[in-house]
Length: 66
View (tube, rainbow, N blue to C red):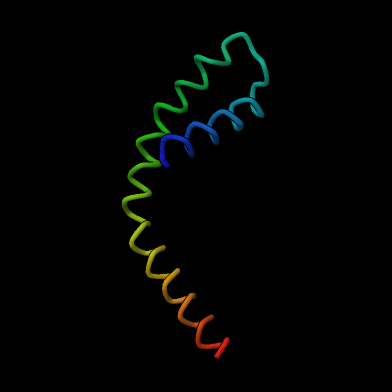
């Protein structure tokens, strides 16, 4: 997930910033090489929180529907 997310986001943002410049792919890979490890660490950090939040929201929705 972190691989695909960081790949897509850096591709789009790099293109938005420099368009189809001559050095587009090298600039993109440079940005992605930083973003990928950050994305993976963020997934590890935020996954427990997002799982708990999702569970809480689903419980509230189930209670509201009964």
